[in-house]
Length: 115
Image (cartoon, rainbow, N blue to C red; front, side, top):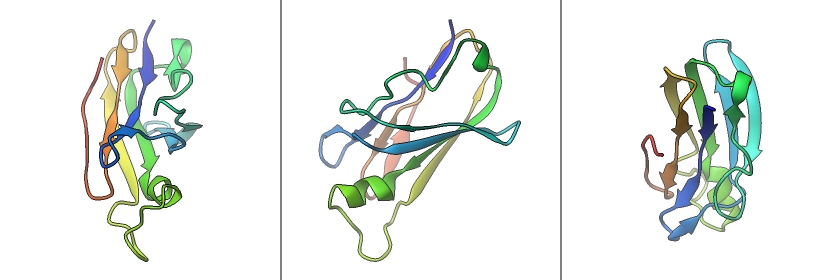
């Protein structure tokens, strides 16, 4: 069964990013599909989408990284360099597992299609 998962690693601290808020949007339909917080391992407790809800199309995971770093006591002054990190991606085959991790620091981020 296909599913969409994610996790966030705080590469500045060298650990998972717990409590980071994420919003999932269906870009084709323009609808918010869910809002989540990462657990102690930096992951969601369940897939963001799976089964019949997981369809081919374009999606966005919006990661609220400035909010997370402020909660950790890490700030960039009045304005953080990174605020919200939008990751837009396409799902061609909804029978597959799409894992979209985020590696983040207050100054940089990267992502990839994981397994």
